[in-house]
Length: 135
Image (cartoon, rainbow, N blue to C red):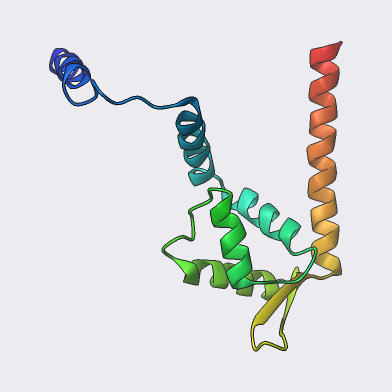
């Protein structure tokens, strides 16, 4: 079986992919998309918490996540709103209707404390890494 796969790979290199060239920018974008697609729920929630330091609509949150290459919610917007609702029920964020009849979300005190802890842990991990690698 392995030999057949090697032959297929060789054949594809000389036929299908012979004229395909990826620029460094394309390679970087593809790698970033793979990393972002694999982002765990913790990273997504952390990104949302950071965005919600100031009020945002679900549409704005979706736009920022998508622009950063996170496609978790691209075809499943309802999942984002379910997550926001869950965060609201757990009292990490507050939601209210804005003047443009758009539901807005913002971190509350509990959410700000959790974000602060998460960022402190990240910074302390970075400090430990720098100390170990530098010394």
